[in-house]
Image (cartoon, rainbow, N blue to C red; front, side, top):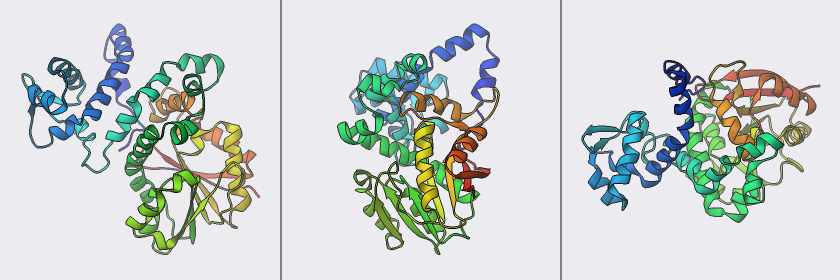
Amino acid sequence: MNTRNNTAAPMLETMPPEAQLMQLVGGSFISQATYVAAKLGLADLMKEKPQTIEELAKETETHERSLYRVLRTLASVGAFREVEPKVFANTPVSETIRTDVPGSLRDMAIWMGEEPHWRVYGEMLHSVKTGKVAWEQVHGTEVFPYLFEQNRELGEIFNRAMTSFSHVTIPAILEAYDFSGAKTVADIAGGYGHLLAAVLRKNQHLKGVLFDMPIVLEGAPALLEKEAVSERVEIVAGDFFTEIPVKADVYLLKHIIHDWDDERSVKILQNIAATMNEGGKALILETVISAGNEPHFGKILDLEMMVSPGGIERTEEEYSEILAQSGLKLSRIIPTKSPLSIVEAIRAV
């Protein structure tokens, strides 16, 4: 999956300007329709054969005509296909929201459309006017305390969504980076350890450290045991803004630095620089924003960072700046066959 380039922009350019604008304005309806399809499991119901709208409405306990209108709209943009009047089948796009396919993005589609998340987008203007986070405007607290303390059910949906995205990006990261020169790899804020487990499985000589908040690490032992790497992993709980008491040759930070503003990102990176082994490397696994008008998935994701956690998707220059403030320096940027690049950093001195 390579979303660094987006074909939507060239397709829009073939339309009259008024049609282009209406297509953009209507994007919110397509997003919610995709959420409805994912939430109801429609793609799963069509995995064996096309289904009539009557059958689909009965299986999902929904209003038949309303469900038809949603599917008709999704079919018009390539998600699902109406093969006969009121009979629908999957397309390669809708196959990605089946629960039983490798790299399923169903949980991501559900996370994006859940009401507490969706409501935050309606306050984007607040973020643009004030520079403040819309999530706090809507929910009265920062996103991560809300997800992991106040609304654990939504937090689980978020975790599953991030895991599903990891299944897309992890193989590309493993293909792009050579870990053979390292002995210990630390996954910082690594959740249950999906990325770390994949790195250890491919590199049998490595030992690993999984670092995260205690509440997040609750699910880690079962995952590491399932992946048959638990004997090579040390689990360390802590707060990366305070201290990262982990010695390693390589530090992994996947979708971590983009969650935070410059000040807090620098603090995390300073804490890594303070404990990094001689010759160690920090790998920041994020989108790297391209210059100019080129379509880029990171430019869309950056709006999520703006309204939800208050973080930033950065350019190469911006990564160089925050690394310099952290006692590190940019070594190189390695693209992958996924939306993420590997921003490799080493000690500045």
